[in-house]
Length: 136
Image (cartoon, rainbow, N blue to C red; front, side, top):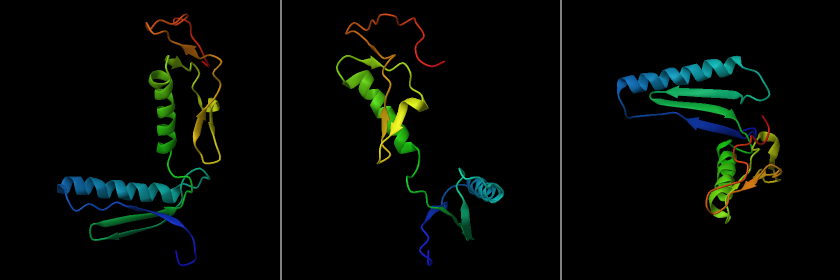
């Protein structure tokens, strides 16, 4: 912005689709604006402004440095895929939960606490598979 404030811009325009689709998009856009204008919590993104001109719809949010959760979820999924399929003998962690996922200085997720992990033998059998493991 002119004052040096960094913002995130979400462009919600669409020039194709049926009138019904466009009406639904416009309705969702209005709902998002109305809700975000009412919400004031530290863990909810702040809506700084919006613009509607012809079919153009733009939302301006506060800039969030570390982006969206999808990259962290992908990092976790790739780690679990590695454990299950790529590390030799498959490993079942047994206690995946928020407390057992750490974030390094670059916000990369790292799995920890392998105390309840089990290695599955090449035949697919694992001792104690009928026993509940991890945190309830």
